[in-house]
Length: 189
Image 1: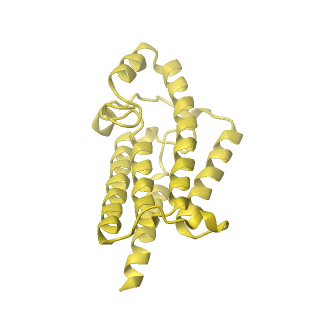
Image 2: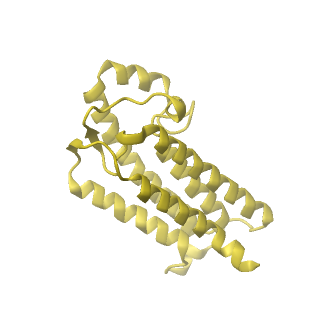
């Protein structure tokens, strides 16, 4: 039965990534795309975070246990992970053809302000960060917190660029939207 506990989180993330890959088709054509280098740097940060969460890696200092592991922390972390993943899936579904992997302005780009976009301007990032938080709770080691920090930094830089482009594209409409809806954490940030 131990195999179940070891494979549950990787299975959740693999199903999530498979869904993401499947849904990446059929999006609108891009009219403006960010430079390649920032996207590649973010990809390196994200894959480094995935590696940190997945395997104990040198140095051994990263394996330092930060809190005791128990059934409560395991299942609590799994629930937080699933909640985050499902929240980002809901946001991805709501975004539909406007979604892109990199910072992009699409043909006939729409400002989506309904569904999860009523709660956060970047709910996909909110969900993924929540998923990483849940996984870090399960991992219970310094490497999990470092992975969460890397993902947060990567998304923060991407978010800032997206914010600038949305302000340019939608002007006052985006300014009003951003004044009433938090970027990542509803009512906080």
